[in-house]
Amino acid sequence: MSEDLWSLHAPIDAELAAPQALTGSVTLIVPTFNESGNVAELLRRLGDALPDHLPCAVLFVDDSTDDTPAAIEKAAADHPFPVSVLHREVAEGGLGGAVVEGVKRADTDWIVVMDADLQHPPHLVPELVGEGERTGADLVVASRYIAGGSRAGLAGSYRIAVSRGATWLTKGLFPRALRGISDPMSGFFAMRRSAVTADALKPLGYKILLELAVRCRPRKVAEVPFVFQDRFSGESKSTAREGLRFLAHLASLRSATPLARMVGFGLIGLSGFVPNLAALWLLTHAGMHYLPAEIVANQAGVLWNFLLIETLLFRDRRRHRHWADRVGRFALLANADLLLRIPLIAVFVARFGMEVLPATALALVTTFVLRFAATEALVYLPRTARTARTARTTRASGTAHASRTPRGSRSSRRSRTPGAPPKAGRHSRS
Image 1 (cartoon, rainbow, N blue to C red):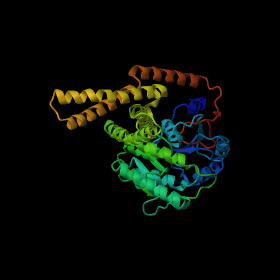
Image 2 (image 1 turned 60 degrees about the vertical axis):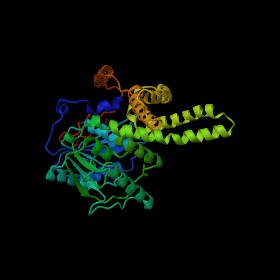
Image 3 (image 1 turned 90 degrees about the horizontal axis):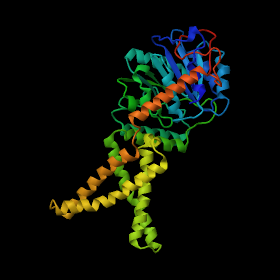
Image 4 (image 1 turned 135 degrees about the horizontal axis):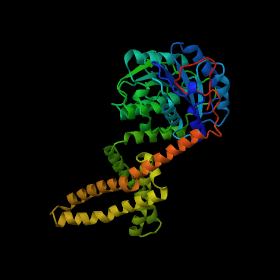
C-alpha cells in the first residue's frame, strides 16, 4: 500500500487529531479515473445542493493517470466543506475496490457513493440521506426504474439493452438479496456506515451496489427515483472488458457458498467434455492412436476446467499458491479421478453385488465429491490461522511505520478526516 493512502488520516494538529461523530453526518465517496474535467463542476453543484445543517465531507478515491488529483486540489479551495483525495497507485478491484477503500476510512453515520461524471445529480444527495433517516432504511438506492426515474443519459439502444439485460440477470440470480431494489446496477446510493462490513466486500469492477447488497444484506432498503444524466465531460469507462468482469463478478457472488461452488464445479466439469471430444477428434484424424489420443485430449478438458474454475469459482483464493503450483495440483487430482473410479466400480460390483451401471454412477458421484473437496482444500486452501496472524502483524508494522514516516506523502498542511464537522476555509488532499 502506498504512503499516499496512509497520509490521508495523518493527524496534522491537535484540533484535527480525533474524528468527531455527528448525527446525520455524511461522507461522500467519489471514485475517479481520469475525471479532471468533471471535478470542479461536481464540487460546485454539491456546494449548491448541500444544506448547512448536514455536515458533509467529500472523499475522492482516485485511480487516475492524468491530473485529476491536481484538479481536485484546485477546485477544493472554493468550497467550505472538507475535500480529500486518496490516490491509489494500484487500482485493485477497479471502481468497486476504490469505494471499499473509501468505506474503510469513513467514520460518519452515512456514506453516499456517486460517480464524478455528473450522470448522478448531486442535488439528490440530501434526499437520499433524508429518505434513509425518515424510513429507517440501511440502504437507499437512487433508481432509474421506479416512477419518476429515467435512464435518459444512457447513450444509444445498445447500452439501454445491456443495462436492462444485466438488471434482469442479477435479479434472477439473487432474488432474495435484491428484493426491494429495482436498479441493482445503480452506482448512486446512500448507506448507513453501521450496516457495512468493509472486510466482507470483494468487488470486481464497477457494480459495487450489487456486491454490497449480496454480501452485507442490509436490513431495510428504500429507493429514490432519479433521472440518469448525460456525462458532463470525458468518455464512458464502460467497455467489453468491464462486461466480462461483471459476468465473472456474478459467478463469484453466486458461488459464495460451498453448495453453490459444488454445483458450479459439476457444471464446469460437464462443459469440459466439449474441448475433450474436440481434441480427441483432431488427434485421431491426424493419425494418432485413440488410446494416447484420449490421454492427451483429457488434458485439454482438464485445462478448460481449470481456467473456468479459476475465473468463476475460486478467484478470491488464487493468491494462496503460485499459478504453476495450482495447475499441477489440479491436473494431478483430475487424472487421479480416472485411476480411482475403476477400482471403486470393481469394489461396488464384487463386494456389494451392484449392477455395473448403478456402480458406475455411484463411482462417478463419489469421485466427483472427493475431487471437489480435494480441489478446494489442496489447490485453493486459504492461509492457515498462523499465516494470517503473521500477515496481520506485518501489515500493522507497516501501518505504524507509514504513520511515523510520512516522507513522500502528498498530504497538505490542512488535511482533515472525512466526517469531521466542516470549518470554513479548510480543505485537504492526500
